[in-house]
Amino acid sequence: MITVSIVVAMSRNFGIGRENQLPWHLPEDLKNFKAITMGKPIIMGRKTFDSIGRPLPGRTNIVVTRNRGWSSNTVLVARGFEEALVLAKNACHQNDCNELMVIGGEMIYRAALPVVSRIYLTEVKGDIAADTFFPSFDRSQWVEQNRRRGKIQADFSYDFVILDKRC
Ligand SMILES: NC(=O)c1ccc[n+]([C@@H]2O[C@H](COP(=O)([O-])OP(=O)(O)OC[C@H]3O[C@@H](n4cnc5c(N)ncnc54)[C@H](OP(=O)(O)O)[C@@H]3O)[C@@H](O)[C@H]2O)c1
View 1 (cartoon, rainbow, N blue to C red):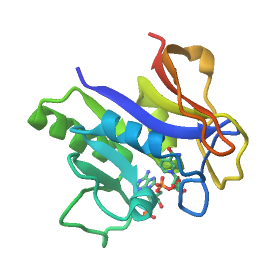
View 2 (cartoon, rainbow, N blue to C red):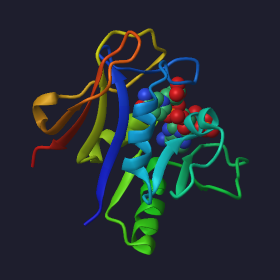
View 3 (cartoon, rainbow, N blue to C red):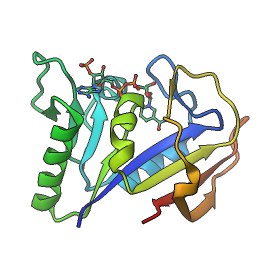
View 4 (cartoon, rainbow, N blue to C red):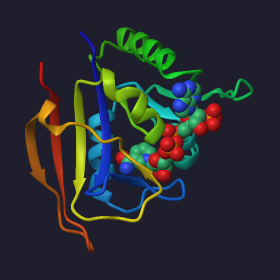
């Protein structure tokens, strides 16, 4: 059984990005992201891939784009989210892993949310100016499995939360 999971850091007003960057610099969150995703396939939108600027090592990188001219030697390319899921599941079977990770951005979270059963959420405690947002979702349909407080940084505090979809 392969779990489909989302990894996201979002503010209280659901902000996730600004001008194709993260709206914050939270080194502890980046470290957490690396630990959670290492060894697993990661699915991302083409804009998020551009924003990161390189494939993330130790993970099968799958980039979703409608642009048939877009190709890469270093990542797998999917023409839609369903195709990305197939590629990620194949990578899981080959690498003996049981979880695939959807890492954003907004468009890809929207496509993924209906089929996801776990969310690794960095809950940034504050409203932040953003131009991309996590889709609204019914929190009552999710069970909080774990909550860990992050270190206070600048104007933000944040928690690392794991949410599992109710069966
Ligand atoms: N806070 C977080 O945890 C987090 C995580 C990731 C990203 N972000 C932020 O999110 C922002 C980017 O989000 P975004 O929504 O603008 O972009 P995105 O989801 O990363 O990428 C959008 C692109 O993906 C492709 N795409 C989307 N849906 C598709 C579909 N159904 N079929 C085929 N291709 C599809 C299209 O690529 P083409 O235009 O090439 O066709 C589209 O332009 C950035 O600011 C980034 O920093 C935040």
